[in-house]
Image (cartoon, rainbow, N blue to C red; front, top):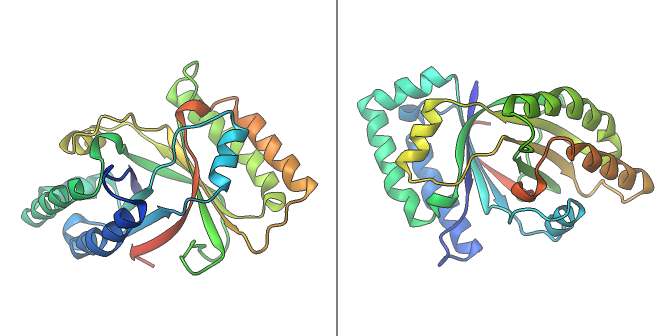
Length: 255
């Protein structure tokens, strides 16, 4: 299984509400309509909620990029399945329809896109989803690695060193679920970005974590866990070229 990650910024003339309404109610059903033609197994939108926590998380890391307005994610059985679907007449038609609609609400040049593999770190028995009417929120943390590290070195540290640390801190942090989603380099992702005129640099990947805000209490243990997580992030993350925010999920294809 692979995941297509599409960090989206809205067109400047649109409000966040206008953007998210069009994305959810117009573009989302269009993608779902073409699900079979595109070979999509699952499709979600995570909409930024504009929570004050976003600014506090960035400040604790010395300042970060502006949060994105949301992220679209599409799962495929494999990269080959994605390629083969795009070669069919139906797949070509679906691709044209999406490319025609996206510029109506997305600032495409500044909305990076890439393909990735998932590395689950904290996995509950039942899937956790940050649905709009639930107290659960989803943290998105698209990160770029330090220039002193290669992509491979940074991703290895993230997976082998940082992942176990966050797993050990997850009870104190109230983490219900935590995944690392690592970008991998492929001509397919390059072609998808070029077809949209995207110039924004892709990230090394992103971390995602789900928390039930109704159950989290600010304690000394939580503060210490947050400090430990940030201290370790400094070993591989370029904070000034990374972003993080809280959002709510809309599942348009899949469970």
